[in-house]
Length: 176
Image 1 (cartoon, rainbow, N blue to C red):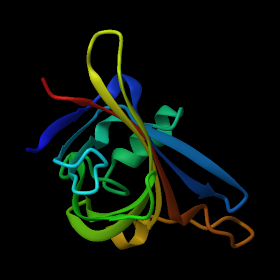
Image 2 (cartoon, rainbow, N blue to C red):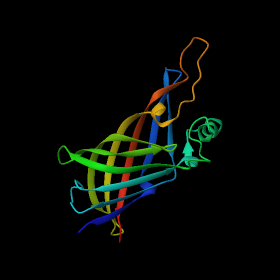
Image 3 (cartoon, helix red, strand yellow):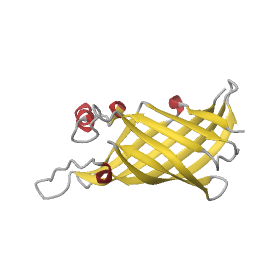
C-alpha cells in the first residue's frame, strides 16, 4: 500500500545559483513551494513526486533584482505563476543515492531533467510525525526554458550565465 507524504516547508529549502558577470554566483530561494510524494517501498525506489514553487516567492536578497526576475524579461510571474516538476522515473544507485527523472515546467516550457538525490534518512519526530530527508541537486540551462534575457558588459562579457545550479534540502512528512 502506498504511503503519502507532503513537504515540510518549515524544514526545507529550494535554492538555485547562477553565474553573474562570469566571476561570481548569485543565489536565490523560493520561499513558497509544495510537494507531494507517494511510495509503497520504504526505500522510496517507487516514489511518485510532484513539486510546485510560486515564482512570486523568489528571493535573491535584492528586491530590485527579484522584481526583475518576476517580470516578463525572466519568469513572467503574471502569466506563469508556478514552476512545476513531475517525476517520471527513479533510478536507485544504492541505499542512499538515486537519480530522479522528471518533467520540469518553467514559463510554460516543459523539459526533462535529472536530479541527483541523496536519501538522508527517516525518523519519527518528538510529535509522532514520520519524516524523511533528501538532498537533491542538478543543473539546467535557463535558455531552454525561455529565460533568455541577457546583457553584455563593457568588456563584452555576459551578465547572466546560462547554467543554473539547483539544490533542494527537503524534509517530507508522512500524511496522517
